[in-house]
Image 1 (cartoon, rainbow, N blue to C red):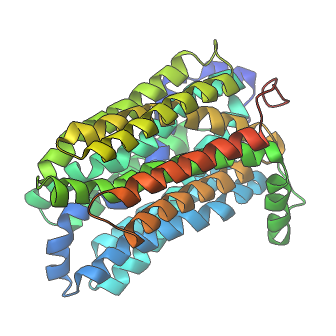
Image 2: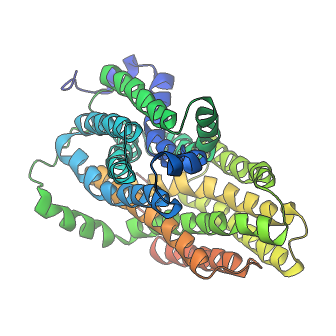
Length: 409
């Protein structure tokens, strides 16, 4: 099975719907484990006799590991193949999840979380590369729209599941659950996924990885698409960092209000992903991104107006973000498809570098809003606007309006 070739006949003989759902499930394992246990933080602190700040490090180190591991996983899948690296990643994910569940102190839990993120990031990176290997660009946009939705929605829904598991059992139940989910996905992948990379870069070694990344960064087209995804993520996480405080400190409302109105954000993102997939064969990549940018700028202007009149109702805060989320759902899958087609010979490396920039930019948005936090929401709206402008400048400055080789691939 490990060496079974995936040619056109093999692809036709598989169930495409099953394959897509398997890819979606694999892609979601990394972000599912990110914050599924967050509702259990208080009980975790008591159970492990630690502090809240130490418990929060389980999130910080997970995000850092998830970001930096992508720089290694992508090139490894280019050299050794998608399937073996993916299966190894799932195995590490399962073992680390069990180690987290059995942790007897916070230091053990943090260490296990680092390896859990390492395994989980394999799903995020390699599924993108598999899509580039197997599907045409237009079809790839459709699949990527589903994939990005899963990666984004998993951490939105995971805390709800984690809260139920904590109430039913304990904080350890969340880690047992993700371990069991990893075993299930691993068995399905072991039986149903074949190798898709037949242009293995055998000559590559670890010393050449920086050169591979540098060659991508020197491609204006790749950099333009990658920064579009990255700064788009910064806009989103700037809102995530600021909105809860506006709800609590300005509107004096509870978490349930935040959760209810956040449906506008998740719904907008899902709608954008649906439209990106629906019109992938009819509207070219750059035109779809252009449409997304227009919608995003409308959302940014609405957010600025909302700030100017004051947050007297949650809809003033979440309504504009719904439009911005809609634009993100249009932009992200198309930009990812574009960057993967710039250097198809190192698609795994491209996916890894893009994922790294995406995670790092999200952390940057969160850090900036948190550092310059103001109860009025000025820092949130200000940095959302700043990152949106950077995205527009990066995309049009590096990719441009005209068609290019990626568009015609």
